[in-house]
Image 1 (cartoon, rainbow, N blue to C red):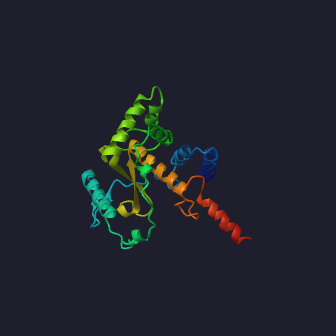
Image 2 (image 1 turned 90 degrees about the horizontal axis):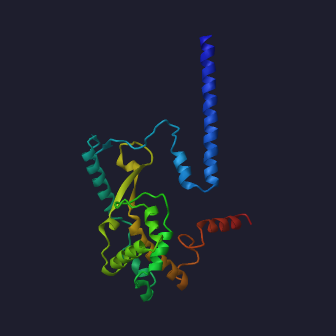
Image 3 (image 1 turned 90 degrees about the vertical axis):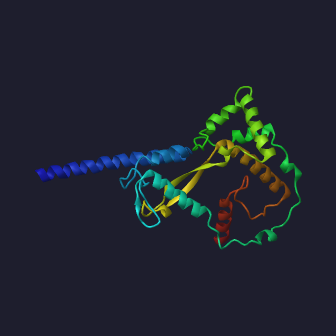
Amino acid sequence: MLKAARKKRSIARWRALETFFEGYVRQLEKKSREGDQAGFYRHLKMIDVEGKRSFTSQNIKDEDGKVLRDPTFIRQRWARWFHKLLNTKSPTIDLHAADKVKRWPTCVPLDDIPSLLEVEEAVREMANRKAVGLDDLPAELIKLFLDGDQGLLRAFHATVVDAWQTGDAPQQWKDATIKVLFKKGNTMECGNYRGICLVAHAGKMLLKVVATRLSHYCEREGILPEEQSGFRPHRSTLDLLFAIQRLLFV
């Protein structure tokens, strides 16, 4: 009877687990259909099929394979790792590649001082619920600049103009926090992680103004080749994939 009772409990446990996963997957599908990307990944991180709540090891090996446990030594190890990674000269770089690029005349309007409207549009297009930089200012807070009499927006615009004219942006706009994401393999090996840089949203606004100006100029002057679909408005690399598919199955 004891064996039968254990079997009954095991069956009940598996049925409960199956019911849980069915509901879990339905919630994922719902968030995916609704386009709730943040909710989708937040829900996805609620569970790990391997039973591990954390993918990142608290301990890291040094260059000699010794396991580091002291937080100070671990930070120093990561600093050395990324310094080497980001300062390695690539043997594939052609120093004369720039000579092969078509030269275009200098476009003076690209150097004009950013207008208040340009900064406002850059702020409006900021994505919400993104990690903050060293200034700890989330995008949602910066978007409050658009409310009221826009006094905060004008003050922020003045900072952008000052950085544009002097070429010296606030240090917090230039610095970044490096976060590591585990990929696969041994969790104590630095090479099994990928680093991402979290920069200040305020600094992104200046970059957005520059990127928008360059994008409009390139589209207007026909600088970009017709074959390029990535990083262009109203285009997608999927368009080329569909075109290839049609050619293959004609």
